[in-house]
Length: 135
Image 1 (cartoon, helix red, strand yellow):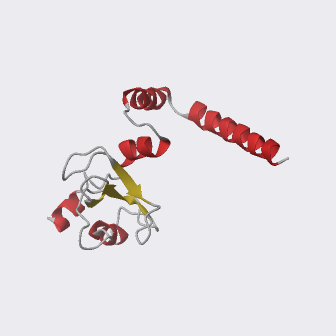
Image 2 (cartoon, one colour; image 1 turned 60 degrees about the vertical axis):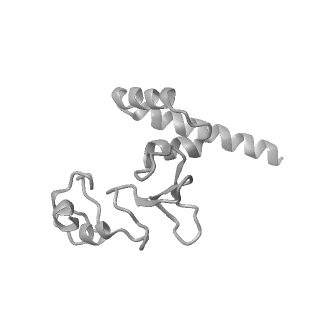
Image 3 (cartoon, rainbow, N blue to C red; image 1 turned 90 degrees about the vertical axis):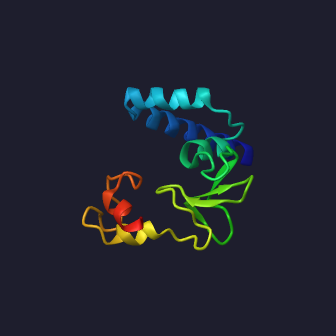
């Protein structure tokens, strides 16, 4: 009985995946397909880190991960290098070696461009206000 339920859950996940995939614009589908083909990742977690976190800004290692499941951090926007231990904000690139709370969040929370939960359409790496206040 449990095997049947697990199989049914996997089928629902596949259906949901294809529903989302088919709703994506063609150029986004092509970009994702290219990323998958060019990836050196051997697991889902590695692929997500490769796409969302990227290489370590300190040592250049590709062996990185987000800290969503790291005890005491639990934040998917914090990158961790598994080679050198470097921690950084994956959104703005700032090092987080002394404090895992990135300063850019506080700035975003008070920004006129941000919505009620602190998000806006400006990439933190391109934001003039963040550049001015953090440098």
